[in-house]
Image (tube, rainbow, N blue to C red; front, side, top):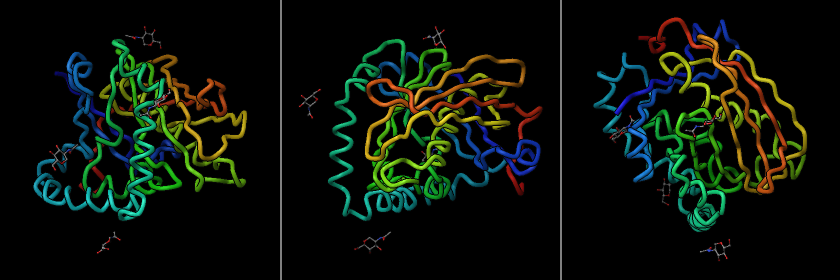
Length: 259
Ligand SMILES: *[C@@H]1O[C@H](CO)[C@@H](O)[C@H](O)[C@H]1NC(C)=O
Ligand SMILES: *[C@@H]1O[C@H](CO)[C@@H](O)[C@H](O)[C@H]1NC(C)=O
Ligand SMILES: *[C@@H]1O[C@H](CO)[C@@H](O)[C@H](O)[C@H]1NC(C)=O
Ligand SMILES: *[C@@H]1O[C@H](CO)[C@@H](O)[C@H](O)[C@H]1NC(C)=O
């Protein structure tokens, strides 16, 4: 077993890298062999080590409560259970998902498993953007062995639009930022990085209420800088939105804000 630490931003760094996302994440990845034999759910730890010791007891006590609230929120407190179930079934039966799950060169991680309790409940993507008409099921995430390529499948609902019927460009930027981080962080020193820039080409409108495939890859690593690219395509493989980004690892690990 080996661990990787992934942290995305703190206030001080945010000044230096203004586009940094205010979110902290660590993750520990289980051995990839285990990942292949049973679907990998790596141990993601949502905070810096500074608060882990003191926060753990409370986190464990409140995690179940927060998980219940999150489930109620995503399934609109039970009224969307059926839609969630249908979408999950559909996802698990998709050719791209089945092929990735049987591909020995890829392994799967559980989305948002690096977040727990309050951090998960209040997360933009793990919680607020989830639910009926939004992102109804958690995206499925597949890495290649070296974690230099990621493939993510998710459904974008009807309630995420800019122009009616077309997914809002800011929503696509949010999704792409996370895909880019997926391939930047594992490559960086201490597996920690901040968005220094993000450039997006909106090539074709992304229609709402469709399944999309998001792919990311590490282009090159130069010391503390990871150059990454990602794109969103439809199920036929047509690229609709493309992004390039530079992530920079800090010189030292950032302690939690306020600690
Ligand atoms: C989340 O909380 C559970 C206990 O409810 C604990 O077993 C797990 O390790 C925690 N995960 C993270 C990433 O903190
Ligand atoms: C969900 O519904 C139950 C019973 O109808 C209610 O007591 C609870 O407060 C609701 N939860 C939320 C988060 O709305
Ligand atoms: C799975 O997908 C195939 C088409 O690829 C379809 O024929 C089949 O009915 C689906 N199965 C379920 C359980 O949805
Ligand atoms: C992962 O993807 C890179 C391309 O970015 C490729 O060169 C490499 O062979 C892949 N590694 C594995 C183990 O699949």
